[in-house]
Amino acid sequence: MSFAGIGYDSHRLAKGRRLILGGVEIPGGELGLEGHSDADVLTHAVIDALLGAAGLGDIGEHFPDTDERYRDAESIELLEDVVGMVGAAGLRIVNVDCTVVMERPKLGPHREEIRSLLARVLGLDENLLNVKATTGEGIGFVGRGEGVAALAIASLEEVSAGEQAGNGPTKGSGRAR
Ligand code: MG
Image: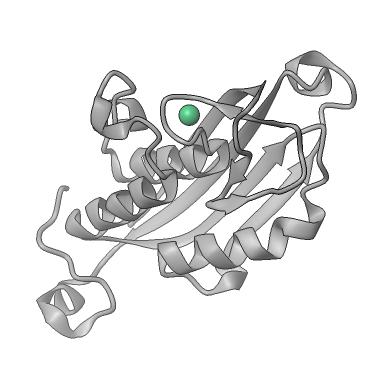
């Protein structure tokens, strides 16, 4: 069996904040993303795609923005927790694809660094973790430079019983389904 999950997130751009996407700080901009955590909109979308595919709810349930423990949290560390939850559910990540929707700066120069970091955290070969970028074409909150959005899709598969017994790459501690 395999399972697909979708993730979407958006955050507002604000002065005096860092712009962190997929765990990588994008330098040079005057604006960054505002939120309770580091507001890493891309990592939040990936987290929701994984939770969705695993049938484990959403990011707000696991890491509520009313919880002081997650103030200024590094979202990439939350993603590490979610990768652990996926493994504990007896599932393995097959691939993740994502899109950042941002007017500026251009994501291109940072795309490989983001891809490499996310692939490492997810335990995937880089060809199984794809990062795309598009703009708002001047339209809507993205186009006006008010915020950044991100979408992600994740595919998971069940880890076989033999692999769960300890020979496989994922340490499954039990099946959720
Ligand atoms: Mg978010």
